[in-house]
Length: 438
Ligand code: URA
Ligand code: CA
Image 1 (tube, rainbow, N blue to C red):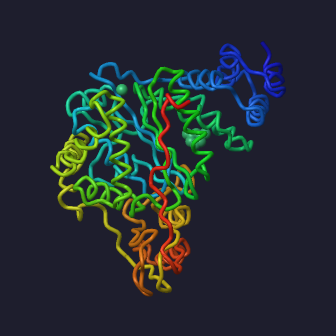
Image 2 (tube, protein in one colour):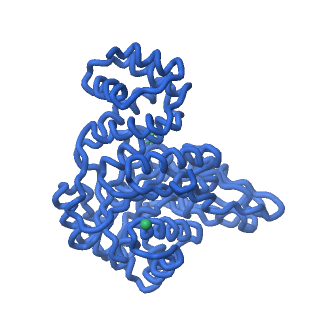
Image 3 (cartoon, protein in one colour):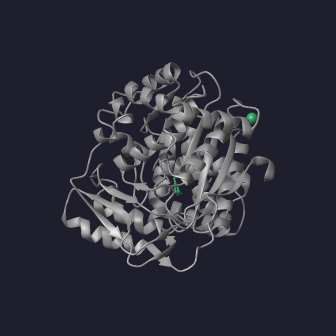
């Protein structure tokens, strides 16, 4: 087999067999196939696409290119959750303990933040003492003991994806749905769960700018799940405004705790309940969505979910009292308010601008090795559809460097569009994609 023939085949619109894909991916990871040939093949895929079987084959080849996590030591059906990345999206910190509080095991690996989107691992590290690095054995033992563990990536999961992603990044081949879908699903499959609930964001603050693109990505990933025998459901959700109200690591932990107390923002709470309901359904823990919703709402109301979160913190060496006393979280030295320049209805809040201002305050990483400040960020005081008077606070800025306050406040204001007339509200959840609909 020769790489050049496989490039030509894809260039001319053909399809590659599993053996051929394996030859390319293994050859690339092994260093026998050079960057320029892999890049040419990626560009051919960008223009020609791949069929469902090719995508699933590529996904599984990447998933098995390195370590895979074996969760068979955990009783029951393991369901993982993944978000394609948004702003003020602290759903994992709520959904994981919420689902685990109903006896469904959650063994979850998460990532760090990059660019305008945050990462669960960074957020967890803002809880004093919390350890995100556990050995695979500790991870599994903890899930068997308390039903829940949240950790950073252990081992080398899907190294082929890491290499291919870096190459795509510099060859203008990132924005290809088959390549994005296989990239995401390869990492999820390597992390060992039996089923997946995907939150595919659509809008200004998301990777997929339109609902149509997000639906296509969601369908492609659900199809991979079907062919790979991992039951997968996707919710396509709104990212035309920040999901919750907090952007920044400790601020998002605070928001997650408030949500677990049943006092969270409505849109965030709603999405958490829906994602959690889908996880309970995939785990066969409930008969119906309405049963799932009833149990989940009860768990929030009774404090059961919050209690599970405290158990998680304690099991991973953190200070569980943060759940009762939010002042134990890292606090920024300086705050200021971004005030409404005029009265009117909030028409739009650009999540990308909010995410980038929070990153510039130090809440996120511009580059992979940037150092972040866990205390800083932005808290929104209004959402789309709210009426505000001139001078009313639209956002609170939290900073440790006083010089960054004013610039961040100015930038945050640019995210807001205020005008006459109450705008039409977009739903939080646009669509649900299941394998039956493909
Ligand atoms: N996120 C991923 O993990 N992979 C992609 O290709 C794009 C976004
Ligand atoms: Ca089921």
